[in-house]
Image 1 (cartoon, rainbow over the protein chains, first blue to last red):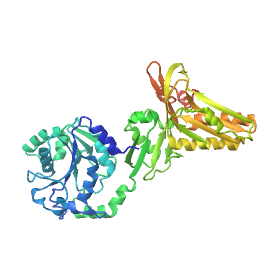
Image 2 (image 1 turned 135 degrees about the vertical axis):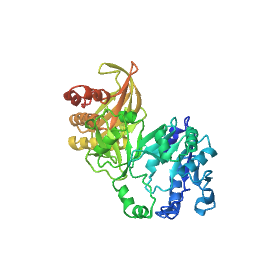
Image 3 (image 1 turned 90 degrees about the vertical axis):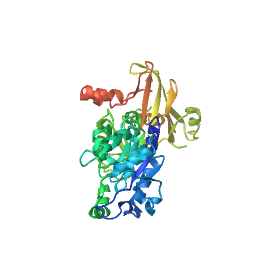
Image 4 (image 1 turned 45 degrees about the horizontal axis):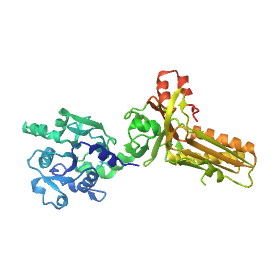
Length: 294
Length: 162
């Protein structure tokens, strides 16, 4: 079974700019009153976690830092790109990265996304549209682009520099007005960030398990006509679908399937199953088109 | 010998037949499904089979076990080809050995009928005119959206091909 990572790499290496990674850890964490990059989840700092998540998808991963953070032990473990502009917020990190490697596309990731999952990042890379200015998720909260878990193509550098020169510095508003390819989040909580001690405590206690409680990791394999219409043999996805029926309805919104569920059978974990069977985390689901043996 | 398997290489019925030999058996019946050069009025130049192999082997073994239990035959086996096949090639083989001919014929017929209806395997036909299509999928999908519900239901039946 191929992985989403491999799919993404195969698709984007053809004619697209090489993808580098930039984890943003240059914020002042003023509302948190402590360094957000150093916050621990499951024994790992947010920065380490973000670097581990991003590395499989990029040729090289960097940490974006303020010039005065270069010697910080947590950040010094990684390749760094220091800001060249002051008081610009996250956009400063991206400007510095684009200046350092103008031919590269940047997979930009904020370090304060404790709910970010592998599937969300893999889907972004897989769906990347290199001919656009950027590829980003549409926020599940307000429908606007999420600039800090996004791919910024080299061609975004000039308009972004002009945007900043015009006195503006909001990357989200920039993407709203730019040629941005927008995706729906596979896991609607994945990009919730944390800014305050209260949000951190809630992420540590109730929120983290709750956010993943009804979001399941499911693998789907496609055969025959469904494989051709999905354009893939398999995929790993995060879904809130409770049954195969709900999952197929969700997939029908994404792929041009012509077979209705009444034409199909369903299998879970290599056994025929029921359309209303409960899906569990880790299940492997196959939708079976009308068969034609012999 | 496993009672059901898929193969990507040509099926050799003589060897499969010898594996069912048994001094206690007085009868052997076999069915061979061949790739035909036409289907539903279209000239076929070749076809490909694609299977959900893990589930297909389970279901195939279940079908053979049912035949053994139901008809009391001594041995039964089935092999189904997958991948690209040319006209005239052997697509599926069923063999049954039994004490007497009647149960051998009946078990053989049962296995091929069930295989065609239950096995998670799909057949894509390539036509002489350059078109291709998944049997039971493409026409039923368009017919279902265009024609009467009765028509769509009809297409759920497996069309005889071999």
